Image 1 (cartoon, rainbow, N blue to C red):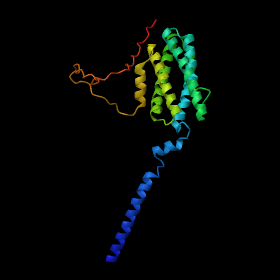
Image 2 (tube, rainbow, N blue to C red; image 1 turned 90 degrees about the horizontal axis):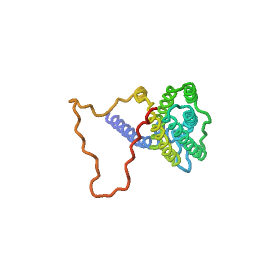
Image 3 (tube, helix red, strand yellow; image 1 turned 30 degrees about the horizontal axis):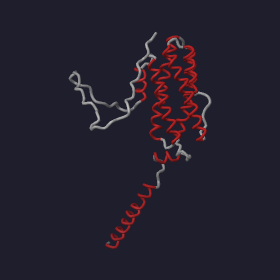
Image 4 (tube, one colour; image 1 turned 60 degrees about the vertical axis):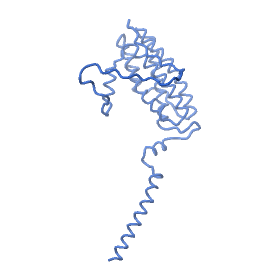
Length: 250
């Protein structure tokens, strides 16, 4: 009996030792199925850094945006009754002409094939604009394009934050400025339905909202202490200017 118990203890010790040796091997070598493994598997090496699947998707989306938003801008310049919508169209044409040139240059260097036609959905939006007229046209123009810019804005932020490729990082910075300019100009038309944008975003989200609760007393909350620098340093930069107000409607 003692011999059997001793043998069992030896076997148990050997199993525990093998398990302890195997764990670090799995921890540091076997990463199949993990997010990091998927990232590495989808990335290709370039002289400007690894190029991920998300980076390539970003390049395609920048190209696709120009393929329908530039002609939409040209149409707005020609057909819109109000100067605000014409001006927004002008910004779309100028911005996407420049951004498309940058995207094509980056894609050429990185060996990424880009589309030459808008998607079926984007062509449908162009057809929808072509069929509309007057104020209905301006409302459709402002809201279709504002919604599209808002969605690509989130992708730009993700790519700018996570990319390991310097060319993609610079393009994301350029795209961020262009898209923000277009969002601003579209909102200045006065036709953007912010309630509709919020409802659409809420319908696509599964996360619970967060934020401080409203004051239960119904009164005005206490004014917080302002954020100000301490010490006697001197500063050379200036605050970002506030967004311009909507243009008056004719």
